[in-house]
Length: 248
Ligand code: IPE
Ligand code: IPE
Ligand code: MG
Image (cartoon, rainbow, N blue to C red):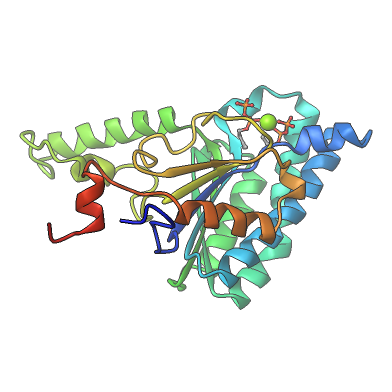
């Protein structure tokens, strides 16, 4: 086995922790909301780039449950930006046949943001080839809590056997039940933490960290992350020899 360029298959699902908008703005003497606005431009380009590169599933961490503790003015700017983004981008998503999903406690978002989101999701629900998921008011721990409640209910209603020890019986109650697990998770801005993003789903994901701030992240950087992914050996518990010779 050469040990070089081991994983030839492209990632099917990429998750991105889009971080560094605030620092991008600060470096230029701009307000933090201006950084988020620039970040939204990068987001737009990366959605296109994923389609050009054949990535069928893209999940973007846009607002964490913990982000409510930021200054009111910043939270308000982020919610307005979300609505603006949806109003501008839905047409493009339809044109590109991308289905929009949302994960997180969506019912706690401002009403107008919820309406914009539902409208955009309904307008794209017929598509199946490309999937864009926005993580909004998202927390992996909240997701596990919500899934545990639904799982308990499924057991008490008899829908699920109380004897089950099958992860799939639990995972179908996660927000991501219709989305495959991410193959690759990218975090920008030099931070090397997960910040409560897809903890259950990333059990066997590959991670890629870059110092680039989110507004500066572009298609070339995405290609670099994918090239790095190709060099990884995903073993899923097996030995390297078994991966090299699947019949062994
Ligand atoms: C990421 O950029 C966007 C959100 C969390 C909404 P940040 O706003 O966290 O940027 P930094 O980390 O302060 O630079
Ligand atoms: C994570 O970034 C959340 C999003 C990118 C939406 P944060 O900037 O909020 O994460 P921490 O607080 O630095 O861990
Ligand atoms: Mg940050």
